[in-house]
Image 1 (tube, rainbow, N blue to C red):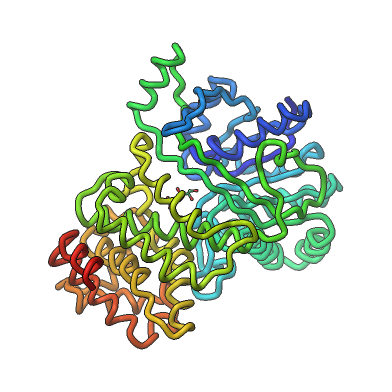
Image 2 (tube, rainbow, N blue to C red):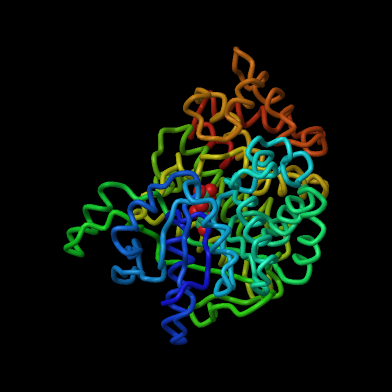
Length: 466
Ligand code: CS2
């Protein structure tokens, strides 16, 4: 294989999703030029694991319909982006690179929550703009594109694969903002080159991929007869919907099962507001009642009912589904996937980075319902459960980039009546438009009290008889 793709964020998800689709596309077409040069972001662990294995790793599917263990070979090079920022730019600038793919998670984009644009107050963004070897993903991409423009290496496509609305359009906006903030001798030529040579298709990706555990590595070793330090486990389901807006050649991912669509926005609403929103709800309700995994949480009948009712009463009436997707079937399939007992997807992992997720997953639904003149009853339950998680986890243990800011806002005596207004006042999460909707604070307080005082039993009563 020859490298044709640069990937930023070589975590478990990328290995179980993007790398698998790309390998299948190469196998189906016989085109060898889509090897992946993968860069890790914050930690270099995956690069250290993959390098001695020549980039090879296994994917183990768990759950009904699981395919046999598979060795994936599409990653031709694995490097630490943190330790080799110059190499990221070099590889993006290489003439053979036609596509950059990204799985850097929500926080990796460094968005200013107040404007939705590039966070110019972020110290890493500032240092990257000042010209150090870039460490932020947006800095690395923009510097790579700048180098490419100087060597005239041809058009290229940047494909975001993160759970953010309009992820391609957003990435375009951030890259353009970074380019525009460079000194004008640099930004002028770069901006016009970007306009002519780079596209940013929107996509949605879907596959549940938990963090690999030591037990998983041991199980793979028993099956494979080799130790694979970079093994990943995943559910059998996998989906990729991509807008066909490429500046240059691309792998035939459709031959690997990807769907090219002109309606990615509708797929995205279904994915984020039905699946991811329910996932977050189960994570926080689960954490509140000592459930370690998502399958345990959805096994609690009150939590399952809350999820179903959020999807059918709050979300489905306020979104437009893509043509051909049946809402009820989709919701039932999602709940079935959550119940997969073999996956071991933890509530702690799904509940991490809540400050980056709840606005996109839940507050969109809260707004949609208030706009339609009705109460977002179940979406508010999920938000209240997140608030309680924040208030009952110490700042040091809260796995969230805004942990310090959230805790600074919290009162020392934490009850529903004090926590709800304190967190609603965090403008990095709740803009005034949503925080001040009449009735929202009361709904949150109501649910917070029930979770606090009565746990699943209180919820059971409320859900079944309320
Ligand atoms: C999860 C997602 O961790 C999370 O926030 O909701 O990673 C989810 O598993 C994927 O989006 C499924 O495609």
